[in-house]
Amino acid sequence: MKLKLDDQGHVVLQDGKPVYVYEDGKEVAFDAPGTVSTITRLNTEAKTHREGKEAAEKALKAFDGIEDGAAAKKALEIVSKLDQKKLVDAGEIDTVRTEISKAFQGQVDEWSTKAATFEKQLYEEKIGGAFSRSKYIGEKLAIPADLVQSKFGAAFKVEDGKTIAYDQHGQKIYSRTRPGEVAEFDEAIETLVEQYPHRDHILKGTGANGSGAPNNGGNGGNGNKTISRTQFDALDPAGKQAHVKAGGDVTD
Image (cartoon, rainbow, N blue to C red):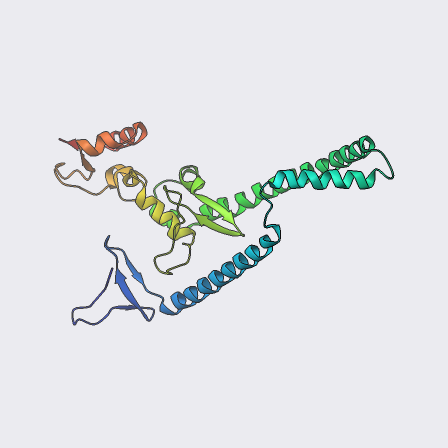
């Protein structure tokens, strides 16, 4: 990326921040203080991870010489039973353990069900609410929020109470305006739409709007979108049908 300059060769500012232009032409204001803060936080996290790793390695030294962990665990269990056999025989101990295990498992299953229900409710509120409240969807897309969610909803997850978006390669989508930080919802959904092969059919003012679509040339000035045969063949059946219904043309 490169700095954006005005006609006098001065750096263009936006809210006091220098504007950079990416290779794809998108312009973003670079938040230097925010970037420094993020770098400091990431360095602190890296130090914490390193110290945790060193502590774990130190603790594992106590188990030097034990190559078969399963065998060691079984040996400890046998020793435990031998000690408890002073009170009851091993068979009764196993029975008691089984009953306790059943009761505990029942509680675990109940907690798991409640947790799954809560997680679903949290997802519907965080993700569904974000789609319905999105300014980008309302202003830029030609389809309602529920249809946008049906297409892109799977790309969003709730992690540590935050809404995180992932691209088609399973990588987190990071902000262009706040380097090092994950993109907020509207910036993330805009990125996903930009990567969508058939975005022209869901963006306002494109082929999805029929007579309101931009003239792409070679269609006699009727206001309908014209695409190449290659582009038309690349559309899915729904996209082809939408293009034809919108009165779009196809050129060889």
